[in-house]
Amino acid sequence: MTEKIVVTNSSESTAAIFGAFDSNIRIIERSFNVRISNSTSHDDVGDCIVVTGEAADVDKATRTLEYLKHMSGAGETISDSSVEYVIGLVRDNADEGAEELSRDVICVTNKGKPIKAKTIGQKKYIETIKKNTIVLGLGPAGTGKTFLAVAMAVEELRNKNVSRIILTRPAVEAGERLGFLPGDLQSKIDPYLRPLYDALFEMLGPENYQRHMERGTIEIAPLAYMRGRTLDDSFIILDEAQNTTPEQMKMFLTRLGYNSKAVVTGDLSQTDLPFGKKSGLSIAARILDNIDGIGIHKFTERDVVRHHLVKRIISAYEKYEADIQAKKFRAENKNKQ
Image 1: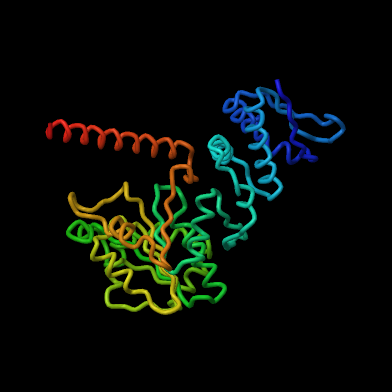
Image 2: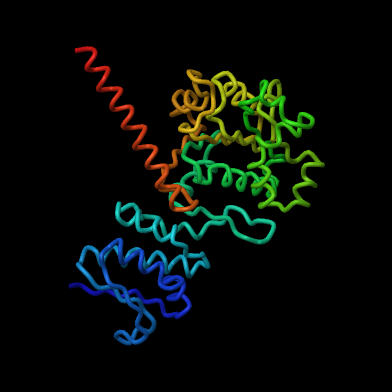
């Protein structure tokens, strides 16, 4: 049996790491088959956490605790989902650079809350946006693709690096179904744009948001409204881009003007286009790869920051779709024989 200690030097830090009713510690103990306890006088080092078990398991549990200690010191809230995220990184030996997550603040909300990357994937996404003029952010729901892009846009506007923010989405039901909705055109398209409103409200607050809308420094509109325009000095976000056609995607990308940046987000597993219609996002990701100034970032289920069940749901669907593809492949090969 091996024993290691993690020195916290603070009962508050220890309590934050342990979680309510020791819930965080129980997750770590189950994950690595170790025993974890708190000590206030272990080898005269002050408040610390003691880990006991097999050497390899103790090493992984200790690495997890060290990162949680760093989160606590940075004022981060330690939730069960963040504990499971760190455990996943440690298990896969992919935790290099994880301690830097709490350092960089992307944006501060209207209520003073700092927005930071919560996963290594999110951190790389932010770095990709900073380095490139056009970025394609691909990945499952809950990875923060749109929210982080809006945070970056708000920060660029506050720093006067751009003069306006333009947010757009394709209204995939812009035909007869949209006509059944009550109200004028704006009322009909608002449900499609609601996630963008929500993100802006959190960043700016309702009053500041309304002021920017009245001044025209923030514009939210359906993708069809982008046709024929040249968008200079703007931070442009195209959300739900998996629902664009190839023609719409080409139209959008060619709207980019001087001193502008564009972020295109989407989840290729949730396309709402008619059956057999190719996604413009899928084609763009394929043909724009390796072009200087264009960055493509792919999130995974590990980057999901919603309820931990969302990760399991995504994994289950990916397995289901992979099984279908495998059966289809076997059937096609059998027919050829």
